[in-house]
Image (cartoon, rainbow, N blue to C red; front, side, top):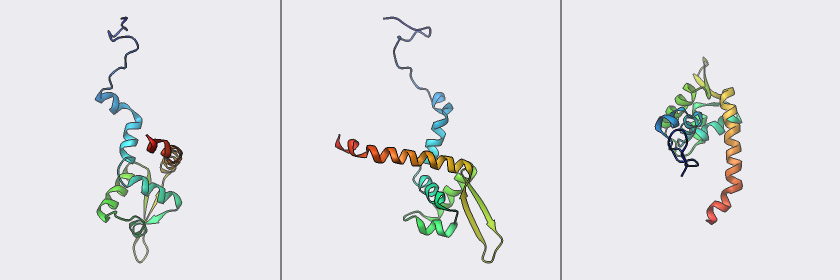
Length: 124
């Protein structure tokens, strides 16, 4: 059996380390959108900017606490903008940023792929 310069067998799969996963740019994004609510909120905000109460009413089974947490995280990571309106009554509006819009495009493509390949996966 021949070996490479690092001593591993040629053609062998190199183990993935924790550091490898941490350096992978996709890991952080998948971690972010892999939660229960982020993709739902991104898709709603892709339709149009929404107020907090509108988002609260739009998603069944999403608690106000989790809505707040998800919106804060999406805002902190640059996917969503939050604009406070000094109106009476006070209003906060959430919208996708350019980064959020580009993520939505990728999510939409992933959704299309999932829809196209859903049947064969269930047949296995």
